[in-house]
Image 1 (spheres, rainbow, N blue to C red):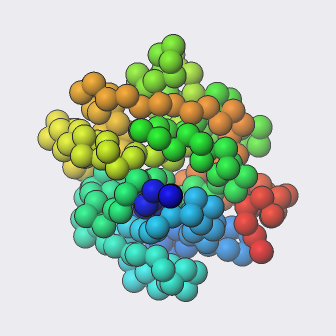
Image 2 (image 1 turned 180 degrees about the vertical axis):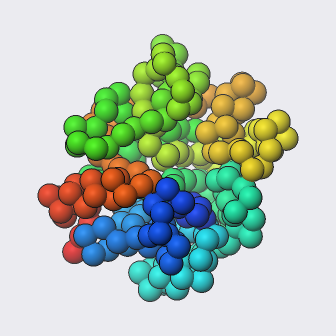
Length: 251
């Protein structure tokens, strides 16, 4: 019997690095090859056969909610009312009481190649994050969240400023039902230390490790994804998807 699974897609941010593009629409609704980023996220999410999909919005929330429902009527759309003053950890907390069973989380400005879902599935256990041991071969893709592990590939450190590291993180992480209370307690500790306006999911993961928790780092080897943060990323995403539309769910 399959375990219940909730996927949470975090899409509340202002997207300021995209300039005027996100003044009129949420970042998750920016189009890549004629489809909004949210379309790719929801298409990818269905590869995991979730019990529930939650999208947490904020900036231009009404647009996001309407678009999400037009793509997938079954999604749950929630709002981080304090999106302009908080970081992604608060958005995940908004979804916490709606989580059913195991949990997958990723950022709503990522597009993942659908083929990696089948590679991820066997590793959805305990607390795990997914990463790559190499930079992207696609020109213009910059992977900037570095991860340090021990000899068992357990998380030690994670930061954009690491100089000694093993992997590049891609925002996708899994936490089974049994470990969620401990993870969210770690998140509370992290926010008390550094403030809700600065706390990301990565900070909560590091606090979880500091409290004795184990986070497995799964090496996906080739980084078949892109984070869309700025106009250059958008151009690269267009090229990636147009070269392999089937792989990214363009139908």
